Image 1 (cartoon, rainbow, N blue to C red):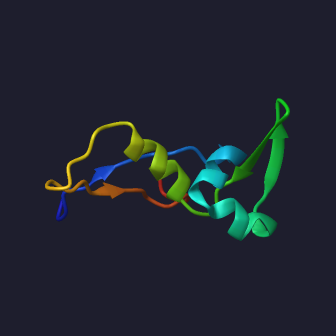
Image 2: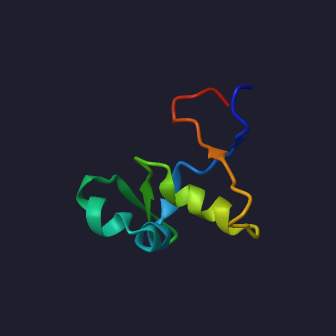
Length: 78
């Protein structure tokens, strides 16, 4: 490995609240594919940002030591 990244895997479909928190809902809503599951609205992700937010929020971070995360695209093998 050339770079020291931790690969992360995030869901393909995320709830509306997370899209609103990330700011993507207001900007991209008309171009997103949505669905209703158990009376809650979800959208299929065209980008990876919201899932990365969840991963980043799971642990404490230092401003001195940086964290490098890598999210491979949707078409990559598992």
